[in-house]
Image 1 (cartoon, rainbow, N blue to C red):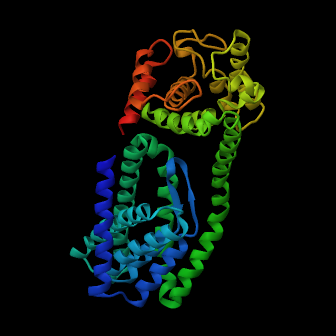
Image 2: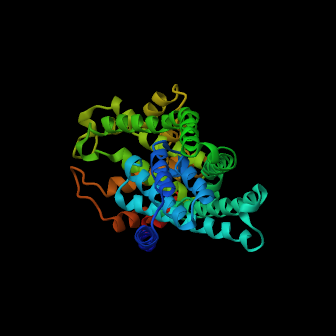
Image 3: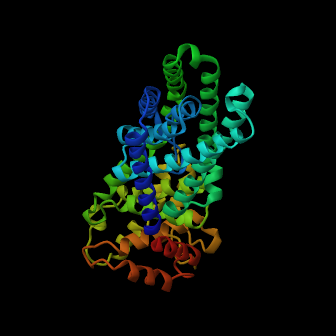
Length: 405
């Protein structure tokens, strides 16, 4: 991962420096400045999709720039609009914003290089058909570069397989880019000559109106997980030693699930289950939860009820019911010695096996009243010693891969 970060830092620095050199040496005309500002403003409409991908309207400025300004200006439009919109509306740090600008710059260079290829055989400006052919080359190159960056970053930073990324995340992103490219071409050949800036501004406003309901819909998932995280935090606060425990388990469980190449639908259930896995402790006395010594048999029996209570709380709620069985069985052991029903091996839902490992790892690496935390290496060694007995060996192996990233 550090190598990937270093490569991205160098790429971002080179692209940003190139954009600055363009401004100083070649200059930017009014069209280039306008398109850069419009692209940055269009980035206001920005919303997340699956696997951390996002939709934004900023690329429409670059697509128009390909057709109406010089190549060096179009390159500047791509970099400047991506950087400014990311800083202003992306809620991201400066490093990530420059990475985004760097990716946009490389994608723009690929597009502009392919746009120039047809000009070797015919005059691009001679007819709309010639322009459409050249433009199609450029758009395909741009979209391919964007897809490659998405696959690489998701795989190297989050452990998301290329196949999962393509199935779950790429469809909406690619559809958005192709739609914006078609609209940009339509504006150039039918409206830009007569109405100029006004045509592009009105088209962008219309797109914002069109996309805004979709943005609100996709944000419901973020709201759901934010609410679940608040509930989990409220439960964890019952024990000051386990504050943030559920969030930590959820983050780790998602990474393990992706390292195992599980389908994103299953990953989503695991994330919900991990956040909610201890909600049943609301029905367990605080004196038991916070007891610094070994529990008495009756107390241990009461504690063992919390997975069932958690699942029973979740079951009637439609958004949570798919994850309820994962939570119900997250203390089952691979050899059948766990609870509440003594399931063994593959009988235990895979999500429950993942959460058990993530839960145990976070517990061992966190200070408790009765012991100091273990190191990550020591905790992993304990998990490996109990693999095939308490824990699923495949899940433990996936955790080991995650910890090496």
